[in-house]
Amino acid sequence: MTFGGRLREIRSGKHSTQKQVADAVGVTVRNYQRYEADEQRPAFEVLIALADFFDISLDYLVGRTDNPKFYR
Image (cartoon, rainbow, N blue to C red):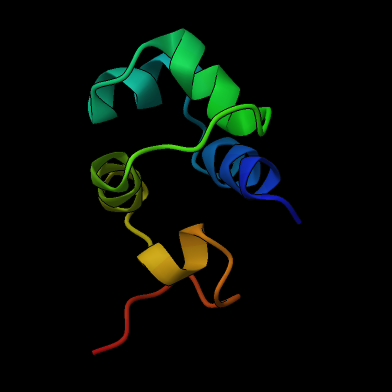
């Protein structure tokens, strides 16, 4: 799965709109749409904000694991 596809799947599973996510992580809706469409990659700071917003691990967000939980 692509990064954009995973991001879209996570957002849909959390019942959030693109606008809600964009506002929460400090990007424009258009930029967020580009992330989901795999047209643009978010900056590292935005990746962290997305993981925090969705309460998932950064590894899960970027596809390094299929476990969405944090490792402790």
